[in-house]
Image 1 (cartoon, rainbow, N blue to C red):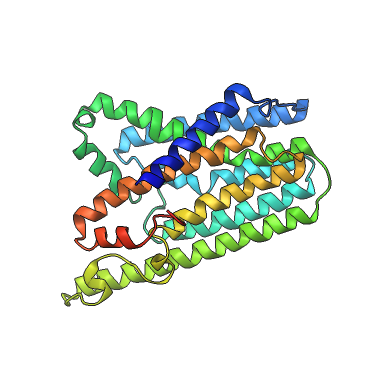
Image 2 (cartoon, rainbow, N blue to C red):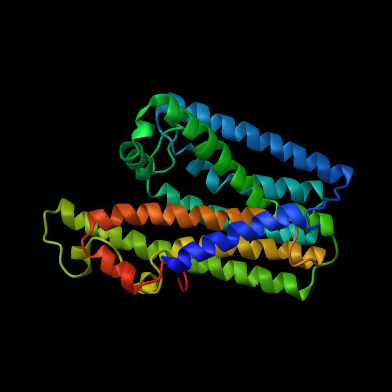
Length: 306
């Protein structure tokens, strides 16, 4: 717990310092880059508004989840098109497309997508959150939470962690060997994330098939959660990869601008914070549901090394 807290505090302090005291947030967009930025900003605002309205009307508050894997592809290819099909941006957009298609497939097989866009499976955590926090039983309070955090904050975060592609366009320059190293690393992380999701999917599918067949759960299935394969080394290998994928994506902007820290870093930093709290909340549910989960927490790091 101490390690997690220190990491979170350090991340927040670094972000505040960079915003208040560093000149790395100086932005020098051309008129074309500014126009592209504002067009995608309007798309973000429109998408967040849609998520809020759809969630309020259907009482399904996972609308952002349906855009998480798709809208970064739109952002990236729009910036790429606006740049005149810059080679570095083509590489970045291609990798984001691979990431998005894979994640969409994984989400779809869980029932996340339906023919009617605003329907589909809802994240179980929203229902738990409404029950556990008394203030959220008030419909107005929950609507405000849905508006500010679920929709506009999370959609804004997606927009922000996509923006290293704009920073890379701003920096310009030819592709270098660094870009190919970064691209190879990002692709490797996508592959590892795929393996982690596939291991979890196979485990959960078999577990629920046994339950439906009224068979006794034994071995690893008796625990109720997966702790083998990549899950032996991290309690959330898929979350670990997701964070590292977007940190790696940011490195393209480093290659382009020559600045190890530039204004587009804020997105991946905020993503790390979100995933930390998301994982902690999920684990709170799991530890109540599965008696052996606390032992798993003691013996296996949440992400990598902590």
